[in-house]
Image (cartoon, rainbow, N blue to C red):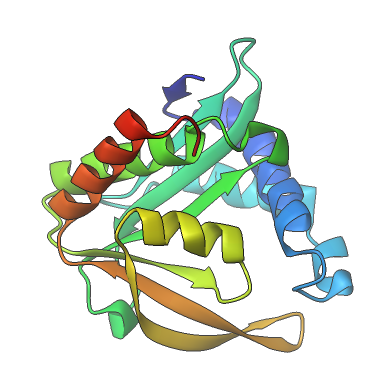
Length: 186
């Protein structure tokens, strides 16, 4: 599946992916009312705002099928706060269920590590819900280590997030490349 930069015509598709991926992944973890309340209109507006006012040193990459259907995306850039003790952060890796187990998650992580290196970030981390066991297993395989914790509010429910950290962006990139060479699916 090809990766490419997004454009403003992708705004609704990116919002839809975010909503669908979260509902597929977090049903039974996040409050149902919170997931049901995710708004395609609001999400589309948020993406259009990002296209109209891009943030410095931030990258988004979309994953598409051979037919051009957007099935996932990833975003990275400067760490949002000091909780991870990193200068770079992967903000999101969202894939539709039908796009998983095709090495697409690893390809998106490779694109994020390449972008972080191009922007000269040194250390990288990301947040993942403690209960998202498949994502945690993926980040474990990539050599990330949970070194921080934080409770976040999702629709009135406090959920524990783990801050996975890689000592260097180069280490993340090497781990992803090794996984892509050795594994039949990711």
